[in-house]
Image (tube, rainbow, N blue to C red; front, side, top):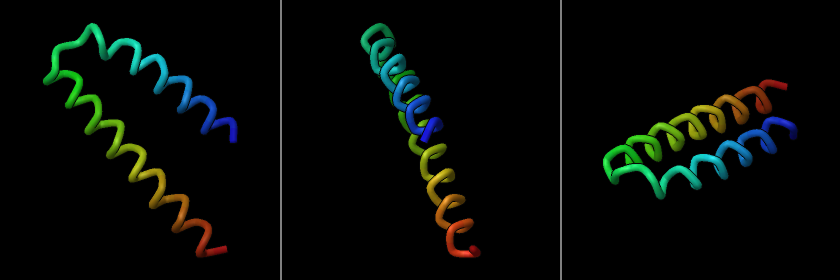
Amino acid sequence: MLFVVAALLLLGVAMGSVAHLPLPATLVAAVAIGAWLAVFAVRERRTRHHH
């Protein structure tokens, strides 16, 4: 749960800085964050199925 709060906090900071970044940098950051969240979701699902 603490991880989710930290992720939302970082997302808020990232969204605040998006207004100051050029579009390509914003897209790269969005893809990186999306991939990280997808990997985290797959790992969470895999560990829950094993237990």
